[in-house]
Amino acid sequence: MSREAEADTVSRRTGPRRAGPRLRWAAAALAAVAACGALAACGGASASNGSGATLTLYSGQHVQTSENLVAAFEKKTGIKVAIRSDDEDVLADQIATEGAHSPADLFYTENSPPLMSLQEKGLLSRVAASTLSRTPSQYNSPSGDWVGVSARTSVIVYNPSLISASQLPTQISQFADAKYKGKLALAPQETDFQPIVTAYDQQYGKAATLTWLAALKANSAGHVYPDNETIASEVNQGAVAFGIVNQYYWYRMRAEIGASRVKAQITHLAPHNPGYVVDVSGAAILKSSKHQADDQKFLAFLVSQQAQEIIAHPGTGPGDSISFEYPLGSGVTTLAPETPFSQLEPYPITIAQLGTGSTAIALLREAGLL
Image 1: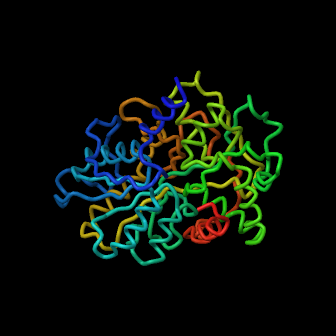
Image 2: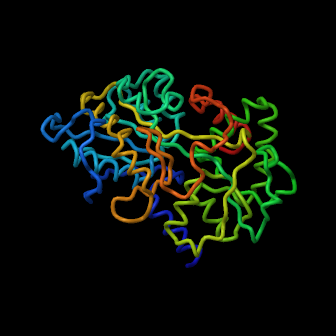
C-alpha cells in the first residue's frame, strides 16, 4: 500500500480531526450493535419513556466510537440522537458562541479541557450522582458537571529502522535536544498535545516551557503535522523517526492497515514524567438543552456496562468501536492487547490542574506553534 493510500485509509476510517473545520450532520449508525441486553445503568429507560424529541450530540470523539455508542443507546431506549462531528475545540468554541441558543443538547469530547472551559462559563448542567458514581471520581468533573467516559495515555511512536529504542528520549524535556533535529514529528494543533504542555509548565514553569517549545519547533521543522493520525502514519512509513501520540492511534492504525504493514513501535516515557499523561474523554449536558431527562439517560448509558464494553471491544468489524481507549466506567476493562490501565505510571496531574487548556494554548501561540 502506498503512503498516500495508507494515509487516506486511516483518514477515512477515523473521521474528522485537526485539519480544520469539517462540520457534518450524521444520523446515528443504523447497524445493530451486539450485546444490547438490558442494563439498569441506563436509568431504566425504554422505548416508551423518551420525550419523542431527537437529541443533538456535538461530538469531538472519533466518528465510529460515537456512532456505535449512539446506535446502541437508540436501540435500547428508543431515543433518537443526531450527531454533529468536528474537532472538540471547534465545537466548544461554537457552543460558547451559541450560548443559551445552542441547538446542542450534549457534548462529547476526547479531552477534558474543552469540558472544563464550558463548565467555567456556566454552560453545563450537573450530572446525576448515580452516573458520576460509575466512573472513579478523579476522572470526572471536579464540580460534577461532566462525566469521564474513557481515557488514553501519551506514548512515543517510533520507527526502529530510523531510530533504535535505546536512542529515544526517556524524558519529554529531552525532545529539545539538538540531536533530534529533523527526527521529531509534532502536531501542536492537536488538543491531545495541550495536556503535555500544561504538565510541562506545571513541572518547570513558563520560561522553561517556552524555551522547550522553541527547541521542539526547531527539531520538528518539516515534520509538523495536523494530527496524531498523521504522525503515526508518517513514522510508520519512515518519513520521520519518532513523535508523541496517544497510545490508541498506534493500535487503531494496526487494526486498520494490518499488523504486517506496521513498522512503527510504541514505548512509554519514564514513569511520572510530565510527557506521560492520561487524557480523559468525557460527556456533558448543556444547561440550555430542553431535554434534560433524556440527556441524563444518555450520559448514564455512556458509563453503563453495555456502553463501556463497546469501548472495551475494539476492532474493525460491525459493532466495533475501533476506539482502543481505556473504558473508565462500571468496572469494565479493555480487551485490547495494550498495557493495562491499572499498570500505567503517568505524571500526577489532576483534571482541575489540566484546567481549560488556555495556558497551554497561550504558550503554544507565544512559541509560534499555533
